[in-house]
Length: 367
Image: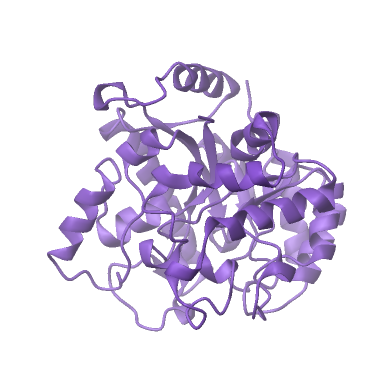
């Protein structure tokens, strides 16, 4: 079974907002949450340390994420939200400190990957793990912090400090902000956004164009000199009923591929069929559609070198919103037979599950 690099999970947001303990099993979390009312929580978790191990999910881009208060339909005091860039800055720093605290308190379950040597040792350990590990053989999941929406960056002079504390990837937008347009809030790249890109490149950050409005994303792809990814975005043209600016057009896909970028496909029903609820609900959505997303991008690229997986599990969605084959993150490998049917071999699967995002990460990590 291949290792998996998941390019997008909102771990800090969920743990701080809802008190989730991802060192426990998925079933433990579901049972715990079924017995109490948790404001703002309306979905069942897909994440847990045992399930990471059973599914060979060795690496995760874990976000610093907070929603602008205007985007929350109902505000709850436990949610990670902000009303201003200054508040976003405070929330994002608290989440980054939380990751450091997490690995101090639960080193058996999580570790930060900060350098190439960290990564090498981590992968060597995971590659020696038995195919069907027992609990005593479970290993820590490697987490690499990434910022989803750069509104928390209020002072460009802080960028080296963010890097020093482990941040390795930045996405300029979630919703629209002073840097560029975002999901459902269109807008081009601003002069301030261009300045941020220059400073990010000087430090060495990966740029994540997920959630960016298309004109801004295209300008970033053309001008950003560093590594570029779309950590959790599907091909818009394959999604029945789709109409927003959240997913990627063929033009963006082609331009990103030409820059050597990697796209993390998302096993979220709405990103596979926007009309999924009307078309039969969860039972009507299969991982076959995710395999078709992967194949479509690979055909555009002419190879399997530009696609990975970015689940966005527990990122405002849960068990109720993913294809029928999935009960937890342990089940991601259930996509393999569909990919094999489409002609992908073992080498291709290794690239798709781990290798492509791993190459991007290795490029930017310090020694």
